[in-house]
Length: 230
Image 1 (cartoon, rainbow, N blue to C red):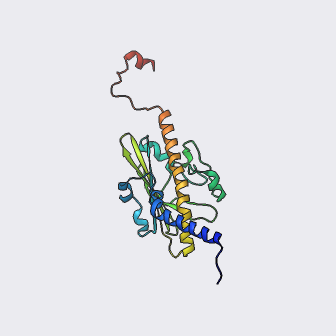
Image 2: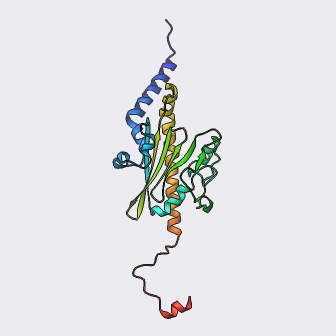
Image 3: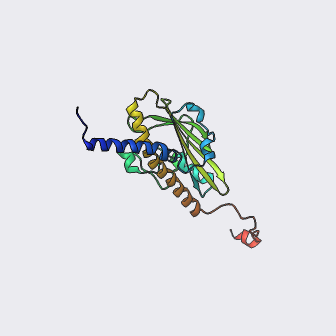
C-alpha cells in the first residue's frame, strides 16, 4: 500500500487547519471589518438588486468630515477617473489603469444612473444603479453577479462610510468557490480597507484645510466702514 510522504501529509493538515481557523475565527471579521452589528444587519440601497447572494461583505469607517465633504471622492472613483484610493500597483498588475488622485477632479463630478465603467480589458462592467447625492451610490455589474453599495450616514459632525458588496457565484465550480473564499475574501479586505482609509484620509485632510464659508452665529456684524471698504 502506497503511503503519502510525511511532508505532503503535514502540508495538507496545515491547509485544513488554516481553512477551519479562517471559517470559524477570522471570516466574520474579514467580511465585516470596521462595521457594527447594526450596520451589518441594516438594509442598504441596492440590496434588492441581488436578492440572494452567496457572499455579503459590509465594511465601514468613521470619517471626521460631513457627508458633503466625502461624496466628491466617491463620485470620481474608477479606472481612468480618480482611482480607487487603494494599492494602485496591485490594481495595475490586473490591467485596471488606476491612478489614485489626491485632489477633487471637477471633470469627474458629474455622474448619472446608467453610467458604466469596465474593470480592466476583460473585467465586468459596473453601472450606476442608485445615485442619491451625499447619501448613497450603488454600482451593479451587467452580468447580475455583483452589486457594490456605498452609504453615508451622518454621525454628529462626522459620518460613517459603509461599503457593501453582494456577490453571486452562480454555477462556479467548487475549486473556484474555495479559492474565492480562502484567497479572494482576505484579499478583498486588504484592498477595501486601504480604500476606505484612503477616502477617510483625503476627505479629512481637505475638510480640515478648506475655509468654512458659513459665517459664525456669534460673529459681529460688519461695521459700515468695513462694509464700504470691501
